[in-house]
Image 1 (tube, helix red, strand yellow):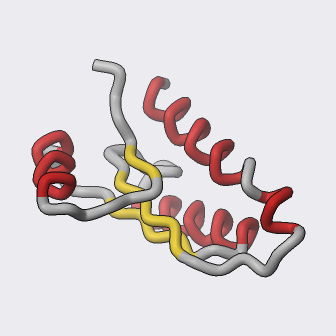
Image 2: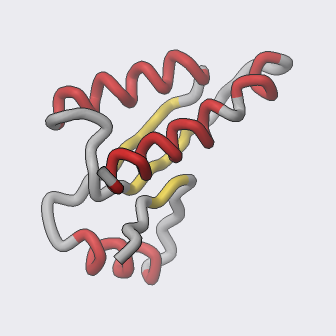
Length: 91
């Protein structure tokens, strides 16, 4: 339940940009690192990213490590990789 709420919150944050995007041509890429999916499986995650891309006019890149998310997250951030949205659990 918490994971679903976190993804919904991320979606609301991105969709909150829509009024700003309506006044200007949107371009760019939104990079998301997530431990959860936007759907039940990888196929639904791709559909979610595509729908979000169409709604915002932005390219959506979702990276979802297969396992050991916390370790991979720290390695990527330590290496200087940047993301626009990062899933962080409450625990």
